[in-house]
Amino acid sequence: MANRNWIALFLTLSCLLPSLHASAGDADPIYKACVEQCEKTGCVGDKCFQHCNFSSDGKPMGGPWYLQEPLYIRWKQWDCSSDCRYQCMLAREEEREKVGDKPVKYHGKWPFRRVYGIQEPVSVALSALNLSIQFHGWLSFFILLNYKLPLRPDKKTYYEYTGLWHIYGILAMNSWFWSAVFHSRDVELTEKLDCSSAVALLGFTFILAILRAFNVRDEAARVMVAAPLIAFVTTHILYLNFFKLDYGLNMKVCVTMGVAQLLIWAVWAGVTRHPARWKLWVVVVGGGLALLLEIYDFPPYWGFVDAHALYHATSIPLTYLWWSFIRDDAEFRTSSLLKKVK
Image (cartoon, rainbow, N blue to C red):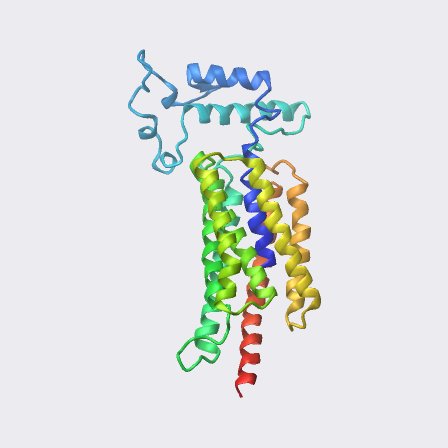
């Protein structure tokens, strides 16, 4: 859980960073002039866009722009303005590279190169890989509980946190799915879905951290812990989606929940005699080191691999180790309960 706490926290924070609109690149007079000229002529250098050609009444010539694009491009909603920005960004960065200048951000994002219309292909691929690792971990946990460990006479598991981990697995996979979609195409809808899924996961991991670390097994006590936190997280998500996407407020909420639960897991790892506690420590320390990649932001190498993509890469082995800890915890608790029954 500690690993996914880091991941949920920075999936949430990552959706804030691209939204900071003031950047050195888009303030560049040469870039601005290029975009303005492109939107008038439909061309950047020798490259022209058919959907930038307008008739006298202001309508795109040849039909709507999205019907003039290849099928794999249409669903991305690249229009004249976004294509002009993209091509002008590439052209300006080539000019800057020739004179030895370093890359700068444009509209809050580094200058990435598209692949088949995908905005950040490496981050998309790594998000998809994280999704597959989460699915593998959740499936292996399901198989362990239902087919390898003994069951109660009523066919239920002895492990008291089974349902909670199943919910966690579903929320984690959902979060990585929308992360892949968001990095594929950054628009308002995908941004809100990415942020909302990450906040929901972060809130649930906070609840789970409290319940597991304090060994809360009574259903009434669990409801008392979970209900106010669920209400708060739900209200926060609704506020962001339907009232105001307040990045500053969201960052404060997410950092508070993330740091609080990481402290809970760190303290629990220090005082527990759990046989797999070393895995928890590796995940906590590894997640902390991976945090440096989010702090030390750098432009993408070859236009594809930036610090955030590398952060996604580090989460893959940590996620695998975390699900290993969850399975060990299920075996440890089941063994302890069976000894009490005997």
